[in-house]
Image 1 (cartoon, helix red, strand yellow):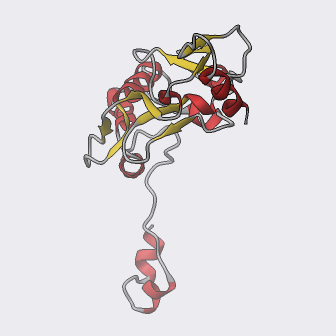
Image 2 (spheres, one colour):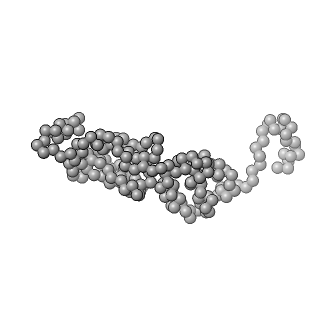
Image 3 (cartoon, helix red, strand yellow):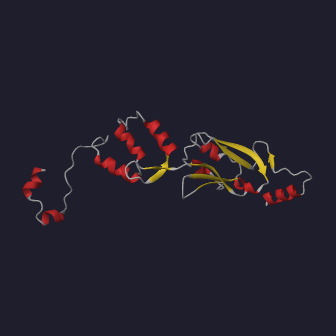
Length: 191
């Protein structure tokens, strides 16, 4: 209703301006994103209480609808990269009603299976931050970050370099193995 009232006033103004700057703290405006520093983690999307920021389920893309933004600042406070700034203003153009793309990247592909997941900037950022961490002592363990969730689990279960690895495990045996004669009492005592 407020937007309709403001649009009515704009239509009848003697010299209407399409974009009107507002003071800090105003409940209308847009956001600006430094795309060079954005890793497309989409934390801001989760934090936005009015769905002004939305993701695209088809590809890594951050979209924004200015008419929905209330300038609460939760996106700015939530952003781990600190690349979001608020710009209070009233936009009377139709652009304020449409979803605009603020940032997009190509998906990163798993180094094992080629399945797309995440985005390159996020994977590179995580790899750089975890390099030298005790849980990633060598390049092979660090490569797990470049794998999709399925391949990462397979890689971790097949490696002997796990920090919690307890040594060789005996094969799992079931009652059917004993009843079918596949395992003798002698083999059982050897393990």
